[in-house]
Structure formats: structure tokens, C-alpha cells
Length: 280
Image (tube, rainbow, N blue to C red):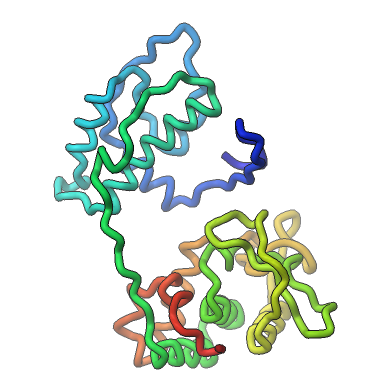
């Protein structure tokens, strides 16, 4: 749900449009959900279906959803990974929770996710060692590909520990140059929207340099962005970056360094952000 709305408990929520990858994965997860007509004289608002798939059912019992979860497989018939099974179960549970809370539906009493697909084992996060982090920094410094200044800044922001959501949620208004201690910023809170920001902290001098280098060539286009407002990182159309683009940029820059060629195709921003920063 895009825009701002207030939950039933009074909490204000800022919603964002799901990126195409998320929409695709949710549709895939729900593609085999059985179809059944609702037994209601006034059907619920179905506009939400356009986000997560059309083949959903109103009239079912616990046995149906348990049977569906037991049959989860990939499109080619192969066994679905634990994380994918958990995502599929969460998609179904989230949809019906939305119907109950926001649309006034009665509770379906869905089983807990752990009862549908079991407890997902935590996937260990691959961290880069100091030498690899130094190599990534060198790759960013030497990068001369398309939009070099933007690519350098994306890597620098990740090297100092920003997660993809923080990088895409960082706006010009979150950066201040008026403090006598130097440039300061209020980073978007982790795992939250850009409406929630952390306290003011000092920006590393080399990141300030990367920001200034990029601002000199930053493209902006109203109403999404202007010279002094909007997201820090923008596309050539002036719109905010999405998370998949952050991953793509980091992998492109990393691939230019001989020491990172094998690592680059599977490199994740989170792995970089959780590794020892070369700016520390």
C-alpha cells in the first residue's frame, strides 16, 4: 500500500510500491493457491490482488492451507528451498492478515508459519575479509565505467556500513553542512522506511568527497527530485534508486578488480555492509 495510512492500533505507516522483483516472487509463490468463489453478498475489495496474484480463495479451512504448504515446489517441479517456502507461507499469511485488519474480514485462523513450513535455518552471511574490502575500495576509486561518480558513491556508502534500504532511503535533506564538526547526516533506520531516521552522526571525510563528486553530476527531474531536494542517489530520470540497482552497481564495480572477479557475480550489499570497513 503506497502513501501514508494509520493502522488499527494508531501507528502511522508509510507504504511504498513493491519493486518488480518482489511482485514477481509473490505471484510465483501464490500461483498454485486454489480458486474458490467467496460466499459473501458483498465481496471484499480485491484491488490488493494486483500486487500478489489473482488466484486466491476466501472460502477454505486449515486443511487446505496445510495441504498447499506441503505441496510447495518450484515451477520446474524441483524441491523449493527453505527460504522460498517460508516466503510463500508468509505471503499467504500476510495477505489474509491485511484482509482481517484493513478490510474487516473475520479471522481465518491460519496456522503459524513454523507449523506450515517448519523453522527456517538461518543462512550464514558471507563477510568479506579486510583484503577484499580494500580491493573493493580500490575498484571504486579506479572505476571509469558508466556513471562513475554514482558507482563510486554507492560503493563508498556500502563500505561504511549502509544497508541497501538505507542507501536508497538517504535524501538530500538528511545531510547537513552547517555543523562546525563537519558534514553530518541522519541515516534512515535499518529495516525501516525513509520516514524513520537515526540521530545526527558525522560523515566520514572520504564519503563527503564522494558525495560532492557525485552531486556535481547528479541528474534530477521534478517532481521526484530537484537540485536541493529528493533522494541523494537518483536514476537518469531523477527517480530514486531501488535495491536491485544497488546490488547491480556494486557487482559491476567489483568485477573490475582482478581480486574480486570470482566474488563479484554473487556479491551482496549486505555482505559488504557487515564486513570490516576500510574507512574505520
